[in-house]
Length: 326
Image (cartoon, rainbow, N blue to C red; front, side, top):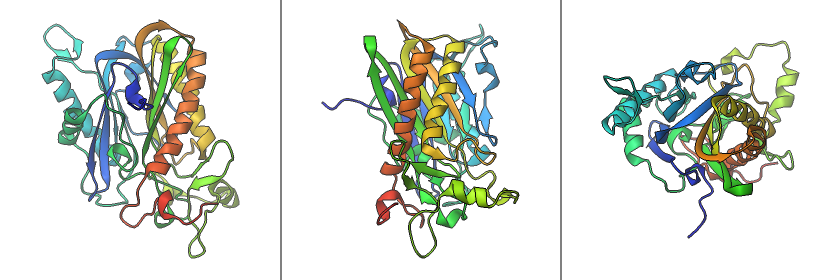
């Protein structure tokens, strides 16, 4: 049996997708029904979120029961309603005496410019993603929250390259596992972190190949790029079977953002809403700094896998459709 090198390699985590290819949107749920200690890091400047404040280490609630990654822009936050309903039906949540309240943070990306803008993930979509969730290796590419994901939009949306959702995992000393799941929807390019070569990005009209988005933005210094605002955001989850506090999870989420910086050029812009959650499930003690360093590596690998597994959709080609990326 092949080794699971995706987020579901972490015991206690299940992942499910809901996908609408016609509308080019979807959502992905990361379930940890028995609860996981969690942290978050918001690095981009155009985020769309739900239940983020309670992940601050000074806040009372210690554990979450799911994380939702969704397309549909701010409309997609409604997918978390269905996830809460599913968890409540299964008897999971924060015990408040009179009921159990599932804690479900969520983050969204913008995919309304591809497919149909009037169809977005909702409560029914989130519920369906829970029903589909399993411990199987996570499906990657143009599925779930990655269905409508694109990268390289500095020349306009029609010159973008199709991206998707990717996952990766590693095992380090004493059996500590670290994994990531990332939906890649950046304004900039995806580059190979070992060579710096552009894998997917803004395509040159007519002549083919890629424009270097960072250099292009430098050439436009002082000019507004507000027509690109709100159309991006890379969101994801990193998880480990190590035992970490909320502060430790927050540190891991911060360090994991380095994986985006290695593979997205530029990353964390005013036009992106980049967000990474970190989950801890397990009993083995580990240094958050070591886990965070590995988290950055698996995030970078997940980003590359997302564009390699993507399929073209609604006229936006994927890496596999292009003759020869430079």
